[in-house]
Image (cartoon, rainbow, N blue to C red; front, side, top):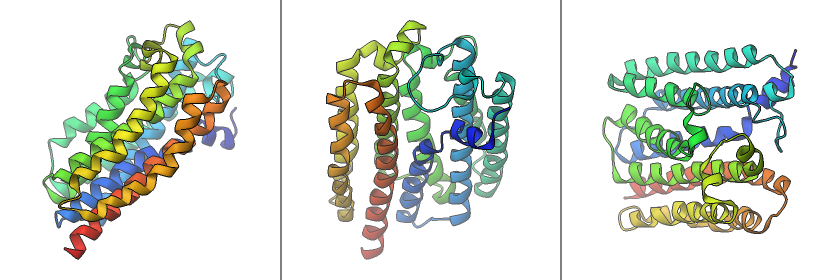
Length: 294
């Protein structure tokens, strides 16, 4: 029987900034449109975090029963380590998905955005299908695409729409930015796991690109995420605040390019998650200040 501490570690709380970041960006964009709704923002954050934890448990379960995590480098995996029975981890994943759907339904009722019911079902299906089922897309190199779509575009734009009832250029650019950083986090994770993933036939994008190209792609994603918001500066001058992220991006980028030991990449995951959170805060503050100060 896994301890409470092990279940918490298995939930991978360090990945939660990736869930919260698009909600912050989307809420700031809603503020810029004059439609910020605090309760809706909180519900969107609850949905995002529950889906993130559900994905983490689902990934733990699916990779564990396939043997992908047998010799992995990194934090504890409940199934792969034998700390918890596979059925318990699977139940935890679906419990999180069910709670996310309940919170999401309340958000849809409040916003009257009924088409998001289909989006919500798609989110849960994508969360499970990453490594679960007979033909998981995460094993075919498509995980990065789905992370960009669901943890970037869908989460950010959905947050904005459920508050303001419309979208804007800041919502789209912020969605792309936070989606790119989420992809960078997954890339760092998968670069670390290239040897073990290749052995079990898990063809992530990092495996397909190869080690050097995958590492360079990580740096390119961070650079694009930081520079893209500059397109908004003529209308939202305070967005220049995102440039404060440049020094924070240098350390993990240096490790990705030069770090030869797989263990050296583990801190990059936490750093990238914090970069995403910082991006959302600086970008969001830039949008809010620009809108408030005219």
